[in-house]
Image (cartoon, rainbow, N blue to C red):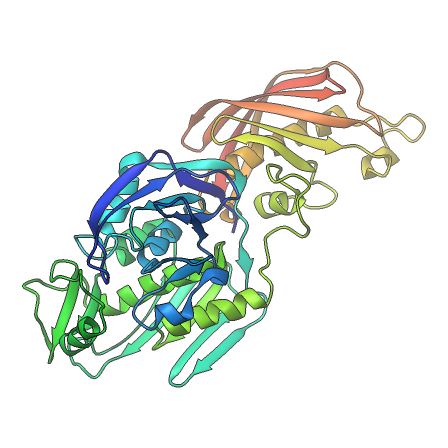
Length: 434
């Protein structure tokens, strides 16, 4: 599970009314730099990073998720967080002129999604870190049970059981990808029992609610003049809320979450348990520089292993355009045993292979689910080897994508040692399923 960090390509504005505050509000999704995460920025300039450490349990209750820092708060962030997480956006500034996002007018998070689509999503030149579930995590709070188990993707199993026959009892599992989020989760509208709405309004909540944005249920019937978008739309919205709360980990999660009867309060307790177990990133140790791809990210992308992984670090990457990577050459390389014992020189064919592997990182980082893909060499043209590569050298590979049509691509690569060109070649390859 490796994918590039993402942000919105440009600023996009949404106006509306806060669900609980009833206040008119303008919200902007703005591009953010790599490794910045999701940040809520208020009109006075204060910023609240969207992480579980800033979760305000006292202000949140069971009806919404509130974040607070340094005396400033923003409430009902779960739907914004859900759409950003669901679309794979890891870096974004969410600017507000009030303390609550506008509730989407069409219900679910479709308005947020459509606004982001209007400007597009930008791949950023850095792999996203993620929290990997290695051992099961379990939490019980009354009737609520939430568990996390190891998995090779992100998936959620949710179960609801309401006495009202319209909502009823449902249990479903969803693999969370941008495509599935768009079609199966995003349209699911928030809902409430009619009797609960009166209680919420008495407690100064749901002031901005309407039958356009929320489903209201009363004794087995919809008060709204509408049809359900799914037979289990109520369950799907609970999944949407859970995704938004899980996003407060501050990084994507790799694992299978099973939730029974859970809501915002218990979701947040579970996220806090995971966070306290120490968030595990995809890298094995801290990066020297945040813009580098370290060996952990490379291992997540490439299928090669010892003794045939020939790239040590990615220095630069422009998705779909170019890449720069390095290979450190030591006397301990196994090929020096026979090439040649008394005169060690790196074989030209392995220089070409290392060049191709750097190009493979560029290709695999740009496709969904890279762990299910392989890059096959299909041709080499115009190969030239200018100088020998010796133990102690560091090879810098610079490749640019010349042509990409479907799974077929052509790249031009040049290899340097100490600024001097040692090799060059035009490489053809094909992306195939494993």
